[in-house]
Length: 325
Image 1 (cartoon, one colour):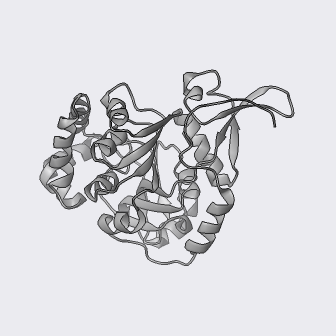
Image 2 (cartoon, helix red, strand yellow; image 1 turned 45 degrees about the vertical axis):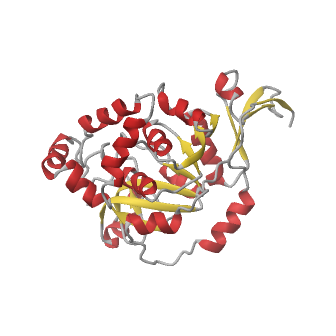
Image 3 (cartoon, rainbow, N blue to C red; image 1 turned 90 degrees about the vertical axis):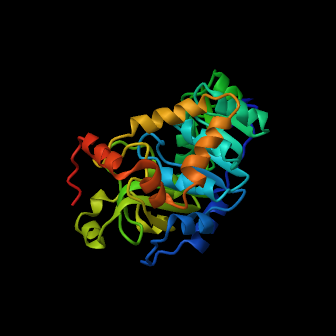
């Protein structure tokens, strides 16, 4: 295949489909084993310094917010980050001193990116869709995937994508490398003790990211009996054999929403955006001290920093009824 042009961006996670397959074959078992542990245990056991981490959805909608806070709380270092669909998580991770390289899909116009550059964090630019397609390639076990966008843009120039000639039609096509994260963080509506997970309402690519990643941590609004999974297996979004850990985390997406369960906490979201606008980054560090480091876990965060009355009001805001059972 003839390569016509290449982006100048650094490739932080090189495609290795055979290596990924070998890792999964050795480390991931298909036995029905209970996987419920605390968020502290999950992050301590499955997130190591230097890992490349990716997450599904955003901190505004069904994001793995409680797990992200725990990663920051445990002061994980030198992480790579696939920053899709929101710049909130990127802001928090940069302020927490957790990351040293970021594949950016969308980070917004703000100071997180400036601080990332000032602190020597390596950045490669993509689009939300390009990173998602990279995860799709990773889930399929192929080294790259062709796409019909990104070419001719500054995003292409600052990415690690390549422009090639389609060998069948002699036309230009963009190639993006497969992405196989070390760790995926995914928040779901329901999960059983083995890791069979259900997601309702809007979504992005939960199955693809789970399949593409070496280790998968699921946080869930509730743990349900496996009998419900067996009764209607078609509602299972992520099967158990892709999952390493299950963390029970009601309101685990706060301050964002979970469709059909609770609405977003607008006041809390605006607070994050206000502190993220601080050029010095000091307000964001104060935010982390208040909401992450001053509490020991997600339950304490809900009790001390959010409060029962506020949580009940968020439940009233949710208007979608799913009929989960």
